[in-house]
Length: 413
Ligand code: AMP
View 1 (spheres, rainbow, N blue to C red):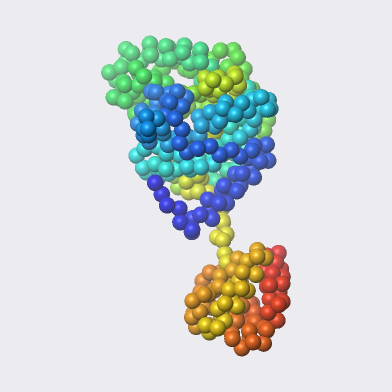
View 2: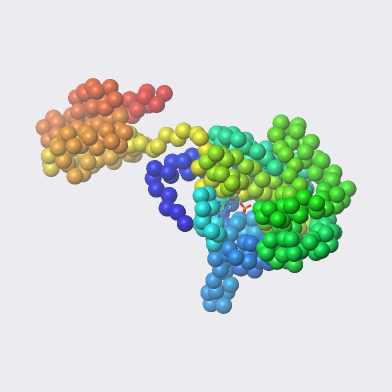
């Protein structure tokens, strides 16, 4: 779990602002749900035999209530969609959300136990057009963040019946080859055999190269949906690759799955920046009506590492330098006036030497210092020093705010 300190926070804020803007342009509204949900919600939706539920959830019991720090946001958002009967208000709902998730994973670069995700969900559109729009949103957002080397992978795992048939086919193929599989995959064969598809173990990969192909098990409707997605992505000019081994870790997915990778030079193998897919049965399984849905989540820490955008750190505009103890209170009043006009201002309430105050003003990146000596205050004036142009003027105290505001405005143009 990481601390995010001020020198990095500007990148986080830039990214979150850009994401909110992008999502708003695609018609999404922001939703915030609790960080804690009943454990059963995640077990039911993510699936019992998944890494997240088996090993990674921070769960606890409080007064006989089993609770979990959310490991992802799709389940909580779906719970909120059902609980507030959102389907009665509108046929299609587009929500976005940002915030921390918790998974007890083995930490490494780009993989943490508390991490932040940006998330979009669409309820009520069976696709495949909306699937393509969602992928287009992610790709456009990553372009704005100047992430190099972005690649989109897509796959379809079909509907629940396809999955059952494929699972049977896969188990029938793997059972006679069980001894050649890694220990993890041998265990998964009995619990969640689809996960063997994306195993990184070389022994598993060699066996899986011969395994039945998921695409051959898709129903005609699944195939039409997947073809529609590919056509729409092509029409939008979004380059993509079909990855038949892409299954992703969670049980709730149906049909479309996708991942967006990028920034590999900095992230190495952990270069999956965003992942998502369709989950057409979740809303109904949570007690709601039959409403199809699709969503994705992107990891903020990884995007921050991968982004090559230059971000201006936030700066203080003006520095108020009182000279002498008698000037400090007047300096504080001037400071508040400047702040009320939206000018970020630091007042040197310690009141050191002029030299040390100006050194601090420069270190903070201020463009203007306002020097208030006791004599100036008596005369109703202040010295306004331009720290970039190195000029200095004596100005009536009553005009200082207006003049400083004008100078900052002309500078930012
Ligand atoms: P997932 O919810 O597992 O599909 O993950 C979606 C995205 O969240 C990933 O592509 C990563 O960018 C990010 N992510 C997932 N797990 C972690 C983690 N433990 N630490 C940092 N980022 C993560």
